Image (cartoon, rainbow, N blue to C red; front, top):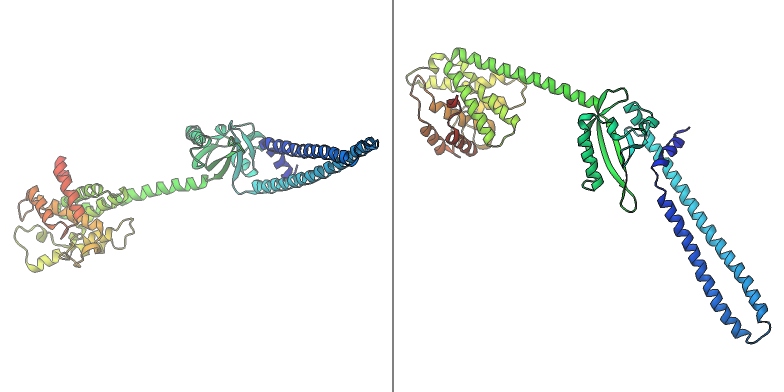
Length: 424
């Protein structure tokens, strides 16, 4: 059996004969109607004409006979012409449909994706070779099964729910990633697109399915997620190691970074940032004072005031931190966070005197968090300020030195929940 014959055999089960029957009935009624109209007019008009031409004439009977045979001849010729015309048109239409079916069959069979017609009872009606190869069944075997039979048990309910939406007319089509079961019992991922074909009355006839094997893509995505998780774990370990290095040298800076990271992440969440951005803010805050490694510990923790040269050295720590991580490939702007967390909106910050939107949002969030932490923490050179004093500093600098949205989020969090580290 060749490819087109195979398609015709499969398609015969899915084809609805009602359309052809309706068309044939219409043509028959049309021909009969024309015949009845012509016969009625012939009888009526011919009788009147003969009565006028031969009133009371003995030859009228002969003319009646001649009229009858003429009627048979004319109507026979008319019927022959009408029937021949309709047969010609029907044969042409049938040939065009057969040609269209063959062209569709060739496209159907040679498609690079699985294609099928699925009955309203969920049985496979028409399947192409690609789908058979995907699932490992022959066409005959598949037509003995239902869509449910090849769907993974965990995906059946979702598939049936979507099919019901299609049949109810709630959606025109749907696409979903689902798991199918091959003939050998192994599972594979497919991308399934379903649409509903209706007949001329609007009644559902069958589902049209396009099925693409995406198992390799799903496997690659799974491996990528595993790899990403491993990289994330390694990155967090690196952050912890760097923070620990700072802590061994300067415990105050280590505690300051950890607390600032807690508050910065909470501020970012309150501002509506997505989880990826929140993670970036937290890591940036955890490392924001990394450059203090290059500042002598006796300067960082000196009880008395710093000299101008010592203060200038302290101000180099953002650039030093940036230099440490500038070659690191990270999914967040960590380098900018380390370099810009002491910049201020009005340009009064350091090291580069940036202002406004030239400072990245993450750095603006960290700036607010670290001010709140630093002011409320004890240092060797000063006592801790109160929470109210820290909030007043942020209020006065809101929209001037500090990002307004970050200040508002920080203020709300502290008023509602207090400082995050104070609850532990």
